[in-house]
Image (cartoon, rainbow, N blue to C red; front, side, top):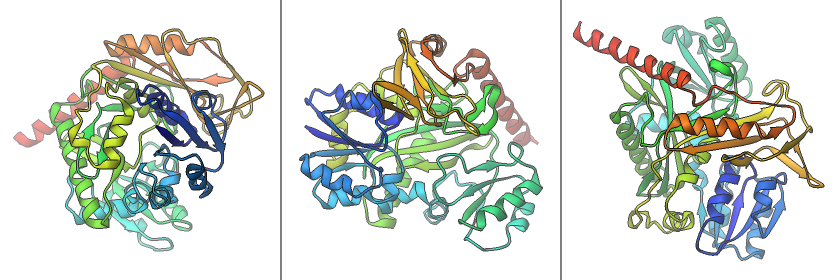
Length: 440
């Protein structure tokens, strides 16, 4: 089977490894903006090109591609899946009208409201150049501000973390000069992610994962694309209750069915739901129209099925005939990023991997030139520990980090007992408070 992978980051390296494990004797081709050494080694051929370039379609036709898999969001927003389908090439990755759920945050919230999808916080959409943001921020009192367009996970700002109410007013006015925005009531709780394979009707769910956006230990510092993540050996995380997961699945199913109704296009690809477990149940932070990075690395190595069988089910609309299963193991992923990341990262510096012991290694935003690997300024390498418990998986990931050399930094606390227990106590306190309020 001739498969084209679009994208060149850590998430795409995890997808490439899943494709390479297939029994369908895959021949892998890739289109990526920089040469990712991990992906390149698995490829029969690759094209270095901007991941939104229509030339990708010609490349796919010339190489008689039978299936395309899209990793990042930019090609989805650029309508690359639509062009590939039109050329007769099936795609794992939603067409542009369905992918709006990610790349237009204003559309996504209005859509949730229209179809009465659960978990939607109080919000209001403001179009570019509109006024009235100060008054709405004052009314809600505690807010999150989200630019409507794609920001690579770095544009969302939260009151209390990034600014006070005056800072929130100023940031909203700043964003509105160039983009629309969504102002939402800030949710208090613990974030978790659920990812699903989707064929338009049927969803096959992966275990929940928790990502860590903040750059420094103890959840301090600026937001990043994600410094690491962990999953447990069952579907839920230690701070979750069973209903958090079942409610999240129901919301995602309702969303997929409503997208078809709204756009006339089936949602075929990966749906990523980011949720907040709060004292009142779960709320939707946002949806993404693709795997998370790093969350793809937690889930794909545990997939028990042949990944290409699942992909075929997605594009043919026959996912209901496959029992998608994940190994009952825990995972901890830790990213090594250039020193100074995200605000002032070291670029073009040499990195070496002397061996990551029992961990898996994924190349992310690096490039290879004359067999030497360099940083780009974005997240560089990820290591993944897989074991029976989170604690053991964390030790494997930590040992893996010690095999990396270069001007790199990583958060040591992801997946540790201390950080997880803090999350568990936080949710217990919120639930006790909720019970107390309900009694009085």
